[in-house]
Image (tube, rainbow, N blue to C red):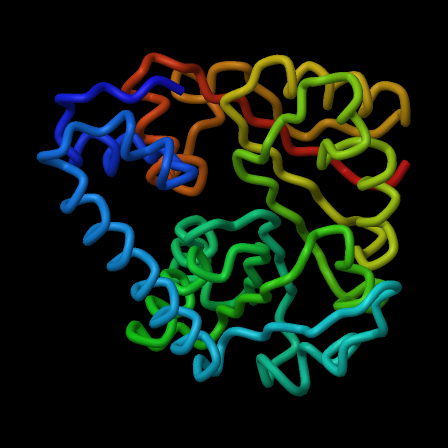
Length: 265
């Protein structure tokens, strides 16, 4: 990454750069912006700490303290009775980030329950806070790593899984980390219903094509598919929900791919 000496700090804030190492940073930043950056970095740190503190008190956010191998969470098999207080279907969004998709889905479908899962607490704060402020009773969040989901849900507890704009992990050495790899599909089978459905929304055509290969390999049933969602006949008000990053990618001219398929054979 190259730092431009006379670039205003707002540039780095908007572009989302991670500036690592204050020593190297100061040698690259013009002196006019050094003080601004220190102030900005300090405020970012304080803001994260504030969010983490608020997360501790949100009633709709759980933060399991898993060790490895993870023990079963107390809500496993009891989400209906102890968390949502109803028997509506449970739908999980993996890698939910700020929870934008989960929040919108929960507002659109009050007869279903939604749980957003992500490892980044500062991101989850936004979704959890919105859920509390808007009194969205059918919405919850969990701060955890996706590979530990089987410790959070019992067999047949989840009806649908949404995978929204995950890291495609396109390097061959990272294939096992792809959220539609055989490893992860087997993980989802541990807690999804027999007729469970997977939704994938991605801006990565290679990842979309990879998922089609996995579906064919496992002889799964495709319900809907398109490599260009916003020109497709299957576009509806649910698939039209856009996260912040999706809006950015659309603005850059990227096509959004969508797949809906049955998890079991």
